[in-house]
Image (cartoon, rainbow, N blue to C red; front, side):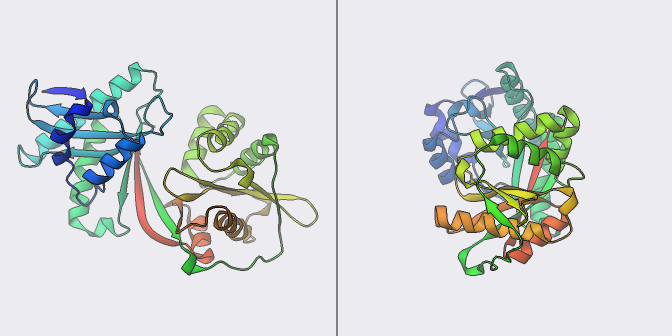
Length: 319
């Protein structure tokens, strides 16, 4: 068996492997569209072949931004289900992922890219989705992605409307990144955001806060001028909101409330302000947002502001 990155000339041979199932939302059309946009690349698309020039039996598709040197996430994993047993399919997929991970590590990646699976909200009650998730999750585990995090995906559309401002907070743009570094650091205390907490435990709160500011400022396509600090009328900082966007949609980048002001409903007001800014700046058909399945207060805020849970995202990672 040969595991290798693809070439542009392989495209017609590979597309038949992209067969959409309950946990593999990619289609051949979305693959070619993102390939043209530079988000997928031949060198980030790996194939398992039955010998040199043999039949393609499995495919792994990693995603990254058009300017990225290395991919950020695994978007798709497919095997030819017409050959071999379920156990063999899982083993083949695991070997393919491991080959890609080794190549990215040799090119300087600190860790294997996370694997993101977009799933329906009721996926655990659907045997077809459970089966499609199970072999992919096992393949990812064998290839070095043993940690799983489930997130709720929310969506706001104009038909849901927005609550009127309550007047308890004053929102202002803030050009000084250090103000946001301080706020990011403060909201880490007792945070229910799994990724931020995990990273802060690893590198320290100050480094995590600076890394968060740099990520949203330098990596996300949203405009830095959209960021807002929320204060009381007396000028005391309550929290902050980062309207942003990814390569496809406007998004709720981040919002936080400092510990001493939690439990007063301020998250609702910050979320509504983020959404209002995105409406003005992007005239969106939809705004998307994620929160951890375990972050019950944030999920409740999304519901109160008019966001609706339309799917879940399962993230498989190395740590």
